[in-house]
Image 1 (tube, rainbow, N blue to C red):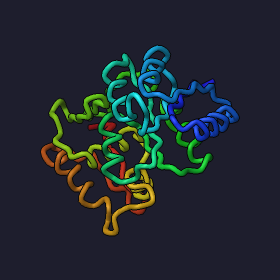
Image 2 (spheres, helix red, strand yellow):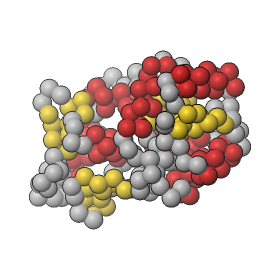
Image 3 (cartoon, rainbow, N blue to C red):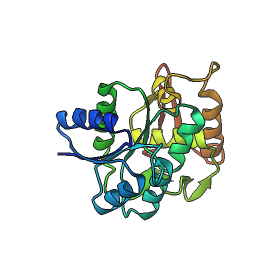
Length: 226
């Protein structure tokens, strides 16, 4: 039975979410204070941490950052918040969040995201993602190819992380846009410039490109034989 740590200071909402998760078969520990939640996560690492950002004692961003610095292994973190701008989401990814769900949300979507995080098998693993010659340190938020650090702005770095976590599957353009901007993407092509930046840093200095466009679908990393 997956163990979830739910951190939410609004008691009625916390109780509603906890009931939904328990009905789906999860074991749920509840917390309303950031400092106490951090202690609980370090003492008994959950399979997924569901984390509100606006918390007393220690806010969600600080909690996630301190968890990443102190935990001996990776704890998947789903941030749940009303803060819905791209800078807010990038701030969440920058401190080590794995996914981001904006309030209000449907219960089915929450359950799907929790299940996806739990199935990735990241709980208990180290902080380093590896795909072929690529590595990404989820704690330091740094990416490397053949040991060479890639100078990536936050959004291309977030795209690379999503592609590495999905590998060897392709990610559709709509899925990438949804993960980065939810329901409010920019009016112009929201991926074009960020994909270009990713290719410039990850592929241009090297002999073989790794980022592949899957026509009519999206993008994937072609790194198995690199």
